[in-house]
Image 1 (tube, rainbow, N blue to C red):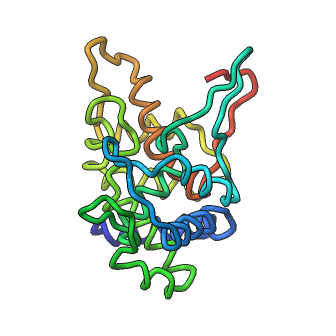
Image 2: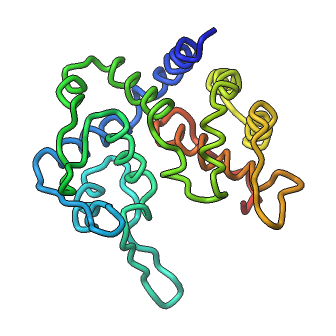
Image 3: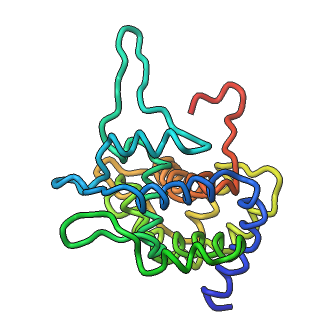
Length: 229
């Protein structure tokens, strides 16, 4: 089976669960905000200015915290990438062609913006899933482990059977899933201290693939009682 066909089957299974979630609503909120506002990315990091990030986040059905309280201090976030779900939506908007960045650093409607809005629900979901699978640079969202995410994406064809099996289950053991992906792809975590038990690679798979599936609303990560990890 060709990768596109296999990914299509996986997308169909995933779409059944995405329909009822908040992801599509929040993605469309993001597009509309960019359409209505004149946003110029920051010059150094090329991120959305945080005042706009806070505005967009407040419109989401699933907003993220923009500050964290410590024992005696309140830590306010300053950069878009500190809100990983919103940043994921931002990167996906570019990958799907719904948005683009001009040569002068402004965020504008992309070549597929109108087509996306004219599509039915199933096609919208399919477009977003396949855009993440094929055109979204996983390493842009997961910057750890040198090129771990890039190598994982290069071997994504071998992940499809694991994903297809996983999405049809009611409960999935994260350790089992991440281990299956590592075994299927052969991708290892490369660092000076090594990763003899694959614990770092498992964490990388969780943050690269399972976290994305969580953003889509296809899976929910639930910690076991007594698990502090």
